[in-house]
Image (cartoon, rainbow, N blue to C red; front, side, top):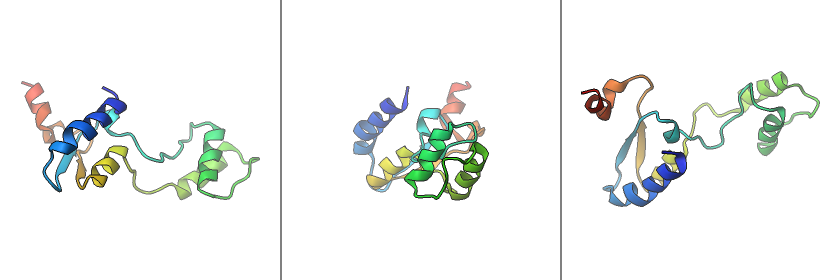
Length: 115
């Protein structure tokens, strides 16, 4: 499974069959957690950092070093992560509830697979 297939399944199979204002519980599979407008990390390329800053009209200089750029990124990056699937569900009138990491006891399918 990858994000593209998961997104297609959500849009074509799940959403049309959900009752109005449903809550979809989502676990921590990597393809469930694709972020929108993800901020660069300290290991990102300098070009990615400057592009991210420029897209947000955050003043910076091309002569700045990566640690300086990353300091700016940390100051301006959103406090909360936003996920593509959450946006798709919200646009259809539904909401997402994300399970915390490392809590398989909250995920019923994990209990079934463990038997």
